[in-house]
Image (tube, helix red, strand yellow):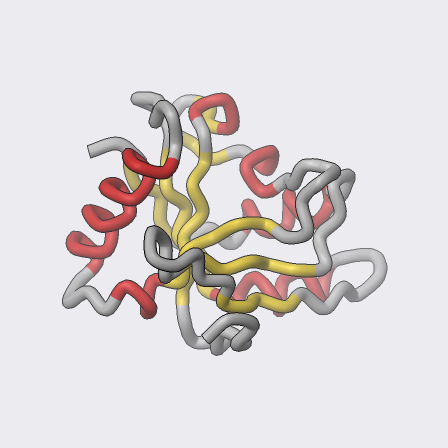
Length: 142
């Protein structure tokens, strides 16, 4: 449901374009938003209703292939635990920032779409903190 808070126990995935990946490692730049964006776009893995991680990654790769003009060979998928992101940022950001992670489905093409709110376009510290809690790193292109 649009605007529904995603539970801290759930996971989200972030598409990290090739320019934000160095030697296969996702850089904090992958978690920066443009000045015109309201939130950091992610996908809610539990909303994909897949049986396992392999299926989730495959579904995301298919989605990215249709959603983006070009998925670079070195583009990656960052897997994040919602609670770990929120806790890390609240505890370690200078302003004890409270992030909100909300379901923002883009029907019918991207029903798992979600957003991480309370990030500003120049929040390098927040981007660095998020990068520190990446659980997994997968190829974005099949």
